[in-house]
Length: 80
Image 1 (cartoon, rainbow, N blue to C red):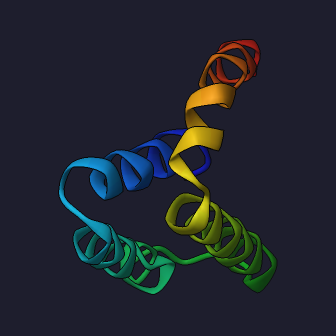
Image 2: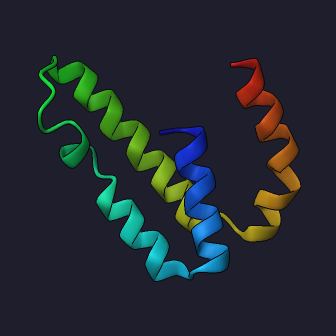
């Protein structure tokens, strides 16, 4: 959820518009993604937290800021 999801939210905002990106965010809710997967509540809480932070960052990060940090994000994703 951290790297590809945030990237696609920013990209959809750039080319399709904010409402399309918000629709993608609604469709990616962890309640939908994890509905058939059993697991402890602590794991579900971590996934929800990650989703929330990534969604807020992807939907509200200014485009110029994302473009200036894109190289750093790429290096960080490769290192992880």
